[in-house]
Length: 334
Ligand SMILES: [Zn+2]
Image 1 (cartoon, rainbow, N blue to C red):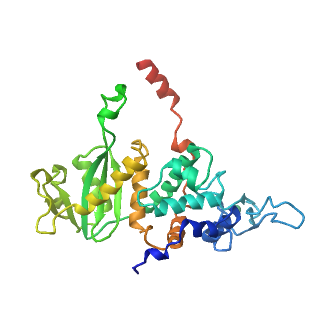
Image 2 (cartoon, protein in one colour; image 1 turned 45 degrees about the horizontal axis):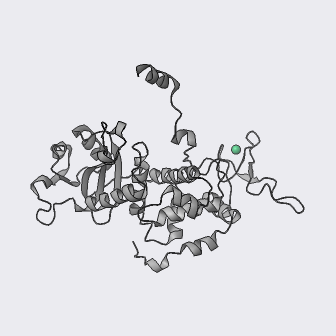
Image 3 (cartoon, protein in one colour; image 1 turned 60 degrees about the horizontal axis):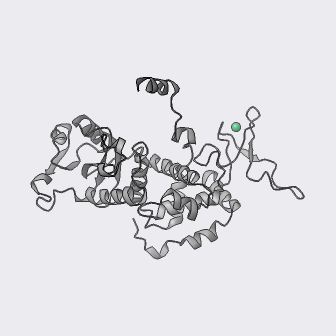
């Protein structure tokens, strides 16, 4: 891959001039999605502009299209069936928030995203906006397979017991995540895991690492049977203060990525809750895998926008309503 310099990256000011209003952002998204030929998202037939702006009439229909197929006639906009579905936030605000999350190495908090970048009124809107962007980033790891030299490790996430509220101190359970990375600038995959048992770790290793690869781990006994699965296995035992063997056997690459993830978790996102942790980790993995902080931002943006279609994260899915029956049982059991 060609080496890009930092001078090629446009600044937020340049980005603001490129997308000053909703119209410019909509036209950009339409071009990225359809390349000038709108297609019905329901039946796949060609569509035409619907009641487009006419002289003397208000511009209330620009951006609307209608399917040409006689039995469908679906009216839609570029937002349909995407992370932008049903959004009230202007599209240029979306692009500015995406710019921010693609270029900030350790992410951006929902408060900052809402106030400084997307300029939306509430924290809740900023938080939902950030998670929808992360949901599209998560789609990037669907078919990820790691090869050659792969380092694997697991790490706990969660706050300290002494900082917890008095009635939650008894439950100091940490959330564990597993990370696998290809050496020499290759891809990284994170997965939130229920435990660090042999079944969990080896199952994920088989899912994300090509057979025949060389796997480097620490001395965790769950990795003892890695060689029997068809991998070459080397390990360093950190508990005996051994961190590198022969200059080749180590897990320093994944440890350096854990550092970025832990910094983001502690200082930027302030200990994300276990049920949302996977999206924050996928965001960190996406930036590294696609080198979004290094390549020209318009290239990174175009690549990201390709992931936005067919993915959605409505509020009800992000924050599910408590199941009524479970809620009643919980009340009865107290
Ligand atoms: Zn149609």
